[in-house]
Length: 208
Ligand code: MN3
Image 1 (cartoon, protein in one colour):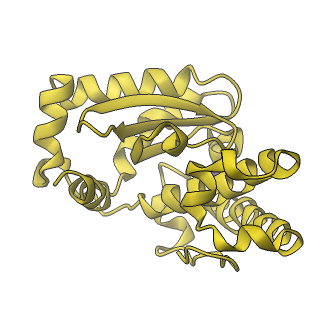
Image 2 (image 1 turned 90 degrees about the vertical axis):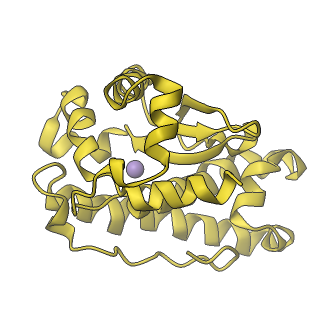
C-alpha cells in the first residue's frame, strides 16, 4: 500500500469468498469495501485539511503522534491506525492452507511459547479478553522477543516500539454476521486463514 498521502484503498488480493467457511463472503466484502475504505477516505480528508501532516508517512503518524497537534491527534490515531491495521489484516490472510512449519518463524514460536498450540492459546486468550473493539497481536520487540499484546480501538503497537507480525481484528464488524456473539469461534477459525509466508517475511525483515 502507498505510504504517503493521498492514500488509496488496496485491492483485495483474493476473491471475497475465498476465506469461506472461516470468514464469510459478505463480511469480507463489507469489511474491506466499506470499513477499510472509510478509514482511507477519512484519513485523506483529514490530511487535506492539515497539509503539514502530508509529509508524514503512515507509520510515522502512528509512531510519532506526539509531534502532531493535540486538537487533531486522536483523529490521526484513529484513522491512520484504521488504515494501517486493516491493510495488515487483509494482507496477512489467505486460504491456501500453507503450514507454518514451512517457515523459520515456526522454530521461534516453539522456542518462545513451547509449541504452536500454546502460542495460539495465548493469542486466543488475549483476543477473547480484548474488551470492546480492538486487536490481538503477535509482535516482536527490539531485543527480538515475541510478545502477545492487545490494543483498543484503532491503536497500534508501533507507538510502543513493537513491530507487528500478526493481528486478529476483534471488532464486531470482523465476525458478527457469521459468528454473532461467539467471538471465541471466530478466533479459533482464524488460525486456518493466516498467510504464514507473509508473517514470516515480516519476521525476517526485522530479525537480522
Ligand atoms: Mn476491522
